Image (cartoon, rainbow, N blue to C red; front, side, top):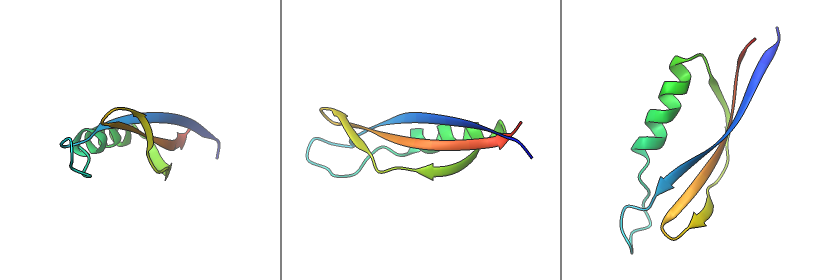
Length: 65
């Protein structure tokens, strides 16, 4: 079987100025949408800081060609 791969960065925002929690619902919604389109999550990397109060998660996805 042949696979098609997709590498994406997903931005997440901090819940509050002094809160260490992140808004994950948007990330989850986006991954669920990709799953409905046949993409399977292969790996999910720790977040990288992208700016004040935001981070980007990197993900690798695959689906049959």
